[in-house]
Every structure is written in C-alpha cells, then in structure tokens.
Image 1 (tube, helix red, strand yellow):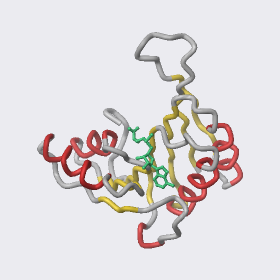
Image 2: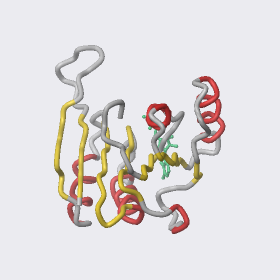
Image 3: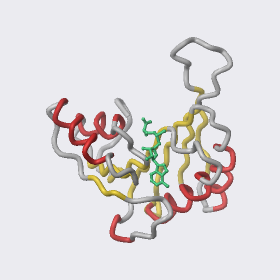
Length: 154
Ligand SMILES: C[S@@+](CC[C@H](N)C(=O)[O-])C[C@H]1O[C@@H](n2cnc3c(N)ncnc32)[C@H](O)[C@@H]1O
C-alpha cells in the first residue's frame, strides 16, 4: 500500500484491527474507510492515528455477516490476516461482493492460515478473476512460510 496506485479510488479495509494498512494509506491522503467488528478497534485506530499525527480515518464498526448497505461500494478492498477461521472464507467473500463496485480490485494478504483457497473459489464464483498470487517473504527467513498476497479483480 506504500506504492499502490490509489488515485481516485474509494478504498475499504476489512478487519482493520489496530489499523496498520489504513494508517499507511492515510499517510498518502487516500480515501480510506476502516472497518472491524471488534468493540475496541475504533479506539485503537484513533490512538494510532493520533500517534502518527494523521487525519481521522472514517471507521465503521460492522461484521461480515451484517448486511449494511449504508457502508456503500468501493473501487479497492484490502484486508490482512482476515481468513483465520474456517467460516471466514464465505462470510468475507459475501461481504466483499456486497461492497465492491461493478469494477473493483480486492487484495487480501494471508499468512497461510489454510482458508484462502476456499476464499479464492468463492471470489471466482462471485465473478472476480484472481489476477495475482504473490509470495510474501518471511520476516524470519523461513522457506516454509506460506504467506501470500491474493489479488482479484472484476
Ligand atoms: C488477525 S486480525 C488482523 C488485523 C489486521 N488486519 C492486521 O493484519 O494486523 C483479524 C481482524 O479481523 C476482525 N474480524 C474477524 N472476524 C470478523 C467479522 N466477522 N467481521 C468483521 N471483522 C472481523 C478481527 O476483529 C480482527 O481485528
């Protein structure tokens, strides 16, 4: 996200946690909305925005099981380590599909939790194409690390 083309894009982060991805995008003055269902996520995000002296990041507390049309639709949807439960693949792919514009790119970084293939299949069934599958280098240098950056578009 440090170098990704963000010009003119409405961007949604799913499962933002403490908000690293949104903070990076915010530092580039991106049009970013952060989301998470955790009750503490908004407070941690704001704390990190303050520590980084950034602009307040719009935050919506929502779960992937919720059908909240007011969140709207996005050109780019990003998420990191959001497929750690077996039911996340279908829940998240449906949520992404509901909030993706007709033309949309989706980037999900997964450390190899074992549910990403199911997510990819659900995305393909929703009309997305998997455009890229890049390996993520292990910070510890382990060759068995299975981290991947999955990119989809339609
Ligand atoms: C492992 S953390 C990753 C956080 C952050 N993206 C990162 O990489 O540091 C997964 C995040 O997904 C959120 N999450 C899990 N299930 C969710 C759901 N059903 N709806 C919305 N957020 C969810 C959790 O609250 C948590 O913040």
